Length: 471
Image (cartoon, rainbow, N blue to C red; front, side):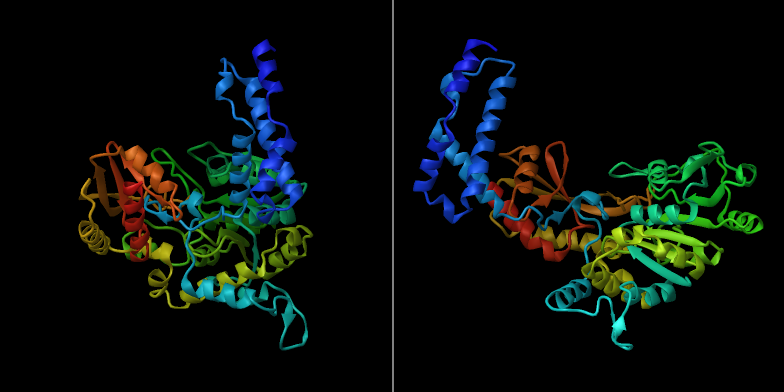
């Protein structure tokens, strides 16, 4: 270490110096002493590492003194009282945006969470019998009615659902899967790795683009525990392709006494073709083809809270429920409350797309999206945004969330150009608002996709633009 760095390390403010300044500013009104001391140490340690790791010479005079360090500590402590998880306006046009929380909950789901959360509940208490019950019973009957399943189980996400089913049905055995279905979704969730963690041995068959029924049949041996099909919900293989349909796999499984599992992933409960979208297999049609067990998400095409849903034959579900892993993966009362309220909308399939925001964004006509875009522009033009220029533009939105990967959904954008600020700077400022507005950037314009912006969001958009222009 050179002499300059050594000198700078010696001049780092002492913790006691920083504390003395903070105490005069009543820092303990914001946090207890142990947190303040720990924060002081962290800030000073960060400065120390900056000096030690610096590749270029740092001017001594530019380095903070005790007062500046105290200010950094106070800012850090004040940040502890600010919510990190916040509501944002999704103006990206990605409907099931994983980074932005996927499907927004319907009002009824939010009401049920509040009602159940503010007091006690019959989470695991059978009110009819006056004895302990099972938490899954609150939604299992509803799920069975909607999907045609014999039984149902809910865990905390679909990765957990796949893990639990594999571990129950094929632990220390082989699960046969087509090579073209070894998917990876966001967050580095990979089917082969889930299999490994479930203590299941992967038996790959076929090739990336072509897997025949005979490939599965040749792979069956006395170690086979499961035949598994995976819906490639976040990509498509096109061209010279072939795959074994689920009916053929079910028949094969029955002939050999091997259960068949289908991981649907995105989990659709209605026919999307009725709304001009591409075909997406529904849970009911998949179970009708004879699958023993089907897994899917609650917060993708279903439009509810994060959950992993397992439906299928009663004898198979009973085994899965008894797996000790089930307790580690179970959902809480808030998820159950939200899921129950979400599923009730599907009792009237024509109503669900109007009541569930994610489904509405997927199925809404582009004419209605354009009307909303025009309404937003009218409101913006009434404001004193002299430096801004507004225009409408046609484009395509995306389902997102590992769903409908090749579906282009027509949409309408509100494009905004600022004569005094770059689009990149505007995007950054909008992202840093108290209620952040997340937009797209295209050259010198920021873009608001109205397919994911509801009228309830207009106030945040207008106020957000007003703030970033005035600051």
